[in-house]
Image (cartoon, rainbow over all chains, first blue to last red):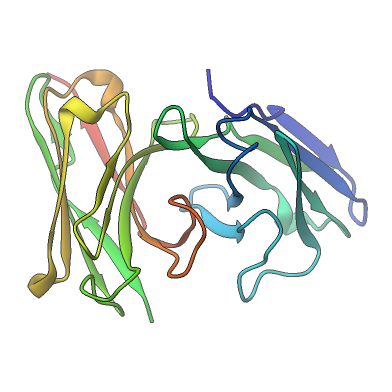
Length: 110
Length: 123
């Protein structure tokens, strides 16, 4: 049972916009920034979004992040087949005094 | 460019101690703001944060594994070592070494990752 809650799966067709939610609490998302990672099959995770909504260099602007209260979201617009991957949110938890990850969302491009 | 590579045993027996080494290049752990972390992923499961060490030797540990983990750095060798005691089959996972984003606003912004090393715990 992960501290941050994500839907186990999401799907969309090419060109669509999909969103993935990440729900937490006041001790993690509510008081700290959220980061997102993309993990393509068989590879190491990739840094996707930091500080809630910032994209590292090289990440397409089709990817965007947002945060409101104790929840965060990752949006992918203009969905492409290469976006098929697992997506994880992460945040620091002040109560646990450690980093917490979401359980991951498997995105399928139909 | 920044690279990280994990090394260590691929198979350990239950109750043994695991020692993993992260050898990196492209940055120095003596530079202000730099940190190196460890994250693991059991087969088919989610990521789990383990530990993080900063340039000033500030160390952070997973609260659930703190009693079993030790993270150290050797700045001269560009290495970070993670030890985990009393290994159990549930610790079977791919272990990743990561570079913490300099200037990041949290302890969980990792902008570079190693390829990971699979460690199996079995007798």
